Image 1: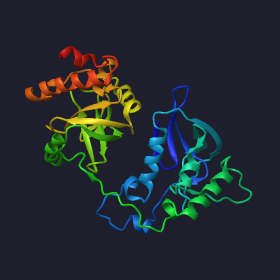
Image 2: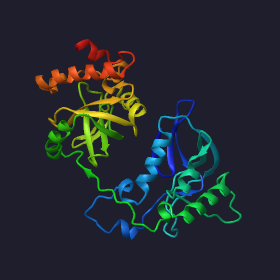
Image 3: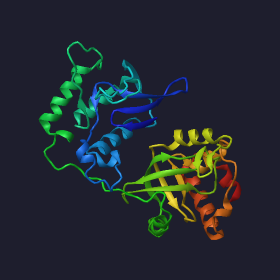
Length: 322
């Protein structure tokens, strides 16, 4: 499961298929065009730059990621296409639904906290949430109590440094991360089975890094000489890692940065690299990337972490080297 923004999630159906679901009859936080283009030199990042978008995403992430939800489809909004005479932007077909968990309507909870607003419809438009009246009542309470978007206080500002893809900055930042030991983080993006982007709330930064000790098949990508063909099992590797860690809280211990940060990533139930190898997703142990002192430290540390975090020794590769 993945939270796309404050009104859309990707869910895994019982059939194993992934489907994007939009929450019925609500509108996520947004920013006007003039405000968005105020600083043209700054790269616009909706999740951090739109007021209350980060809070809305985090509320949904903590509420539903990794959990089973109930989805009731309310309506299908047909695709629209923009034209020279129309001001309506192009939208793909959208499945709009009510998503609940433990009896809680996620859309209603978002609106009640002021993290979303309710869409108004024409009287003859019946394509709306099956709990539309409850949404209106939740919005009225949020307005009365000055919650979120309806607050008179200054909007929260998230200054997040993005050092992903910048090798020099990553190397400069590495000693600080190493002194910190284990760092808590949220997996923001999965590039491949072994390459991830982390958001580190304590350090307020975004970092791209590689999993220590393993390498996964590479997917297709644009290169100067043309499109590089994907290696076998690259899609399976990325899907495996996505399902395991995307938008979940993890602990990371950083080792070194030859071309990117290399890290041991731990879940609540064990070592991510160990899980990947156990499921035959990785195809090459890249220990030659790590200097011998770092390799010994990595193996010893990983063994201690796995022994303390895993009820069973799921990290068979690490156990075999200790």
